[in-house]
Amino acid sequence: MGVRKGYEPGTFCWADLSTADAEGAKAFYGDLLGWEFRDNELPGGGIYTMCHVGGEEVAAIVGQDERPGHWNHYVSVASAEETTAEAKRLGATVVEEPFDVMDAGRMAVFTDPGGAMFCAWEPRDHVGAGRVNDAGCITWNELQTGQPGEAAAFYAGLFGWEAEPIEQDGTTVYLTVKNSAGRTNGGIMPTTGTPADAPSFWLAYFTVPSCDDAVARTQELGGRVLAGPMEPGFGRIAVLSDPQGAPFAVFEGETDE
Image 1 (tube, rainbow, N blue to C red):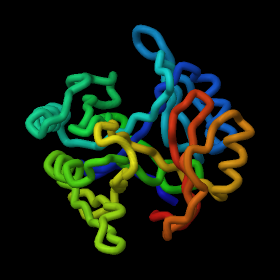
Image 2: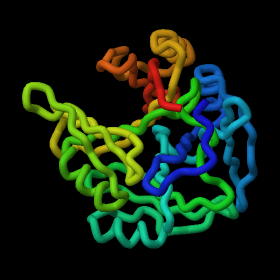
Image 3: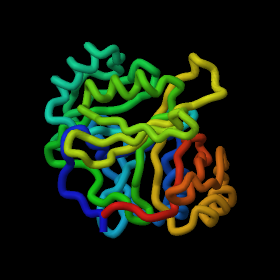
């Protein structure tokens, strides 16, 4: 089982969904991914809903005026302040300067030079997802960008990532990303056929027992199929959106522990 008690700095560790319809999102993901929920009141108002698989926190949902909804991707860091300073030096835009999230941790929010939003997470009481890779859990984070080389250089400078290209006929079709500890940490998908100035974005993949069943159920629940199903050579995947418009992906195949 993919139980986690901590994360090396530079590792994706958490994801939460910002959505204008939190109750609708709970109904959708609860059915599709088998999540159970616990609502937590936020200081100053609002609810932060923890999503559970096998008793472990795997993601969260927060009600915000976000149309369409979107998933937020968190990378574990030793220091939110130091990460922010380095991100600025490397050309990122700081959306939110470092701030405390009660006793859970300290975070900052950025967009990379290509426009993709991501978060830095300095853990305290909350290290991140307590379970990954298992059915219903996040298993992969993928940057879709028209500037893969520039993106790889940016994240290498910020988090120490090493990008390993996968080539076909002399063309780089994908880059896998390893963190500083040498663990595969995600990927970078070069986007072709899109405008050069189209913003980059991060995409979360969740493990499912059957990609085809997940696609069919997504449509039944009011979501959409954006791409696939397809078999890129290491499993079966599809890119979907929930009824509130937030894109995500599902993966059927072998995963790491």
